[in-house]
Image (cartoon, rainbow, N blue to C red; front, side):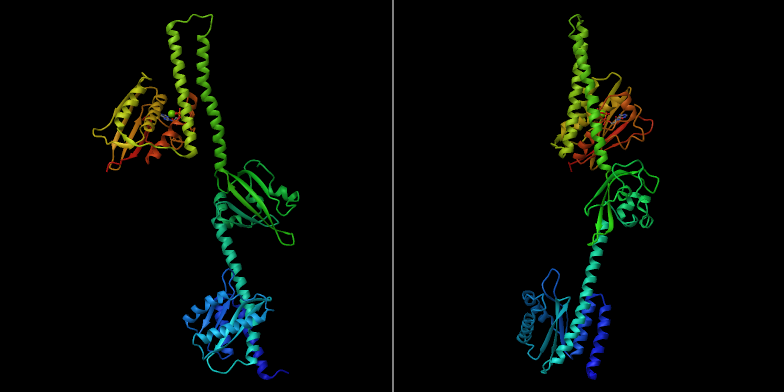
Length: 520
Ligand code: ATP
Ligand code: MG
């Protein structure tokens, strides 16, 4: 039979242990443990120091100890290498000795203390230290009481620490899933969607609640046969046969709403338990629209280059071989006309090659702008006069207000812009007036080129500045690479300006651009 006091102590300890193991908030738990320990040993002050995950030992909670003492203590604790192995109790005794010495030396001479390690799963996770301010030494019973209590407290502390770690990990995973641009699905071994992140719900245009707990094939369905093996086919074939066997599939994903399917690439990766059973499959869904566009652009480039460059070369070759025929004696005027065509086509070829080179340079790293003082009215007139020689159907007019400000800009590049806009006006309007006008605003100048042709259709307006874009009519009736406006936009934007379509319906085309004024 245990003596009464011991029974009461044991019951007291059990009750405390129960209460402690329910507390999962580490800070609250430590305060409770310390309060109980101080009360149990009729102490006056105390503290608990814990081994940090990444930092050294540190006092986590204290009671009745002045801040100055703790400030003094923390760096010292940081330097003591506390043993992780509880078998090395001599080291712990050493800590007790150090602590007593410190207590004494900082003028707490009236205090005496007892310290005990907090041991959980055979690891020292911290120490608890209790001070009394009267001379009576701590008895063996005191020590054993604190010892049993410390063992219970250590388990509670470890639980709270683990709980905190798990919560932290969960928060990190949640934040990661919310932040990634790729769609992420966590799929059960029975191929049900257990979790879906916001990016995926945006991609498929459906609510997360509507996606979760559906079967995988209900959510991932393809508008046309995809490239690669579907998850269902792969699983039927025994996938994953090895722990790191990834699966990749690419295709057009059907969406929940009536909008065009989204080109995606999906990578499936298995997650196995340590025993090797399949826990989950993680699918990362990447929007590959841009890759597709780049691919299409590449093929457009090849077809444009081959088609547009071949035409002038074929014309030149045709005229040259006709002129060279031995059996013909050509009229001087015919020779003259033919040479003129050859020259024009050669110029066209040079222009096109230059545009292509500019477009490639632009992609490679931007456009260099050499700014000098530019008289835009003069520049516009120069280009207009040059291009007027190419047409008799059009009348090119230049209309600038007097005192048009000088603009700091790259003259050669702006000449290219005027030239592109006026050539378009000549090319796409059958005849009539082409007007180049300038207007002055407080912070910028605005230049417009307008014609009296069919204008730009509403559906083409958002695209005319895209690389290689040509309206359907233009493709049918005229020659061109679809680079003129793309280059013009790049040049204007490199100057800090903007370019836009300003056509009114049934009024012919009007393209305007702005350039910042630097004269204030
Ligand atoms: P490039 O200029 O490279 O020889 P392009 O003239 O076809 O070829 P852009 O100058 O970039 O290319 O013009 C793109 C498209 O915008 C044209 O194909 C045409 O459909 C339309 N467009 C441009 N200017 C006009 C205009 N003045 N009137 C009607 N459509 C136009
Ligand atoms: Mg053009």
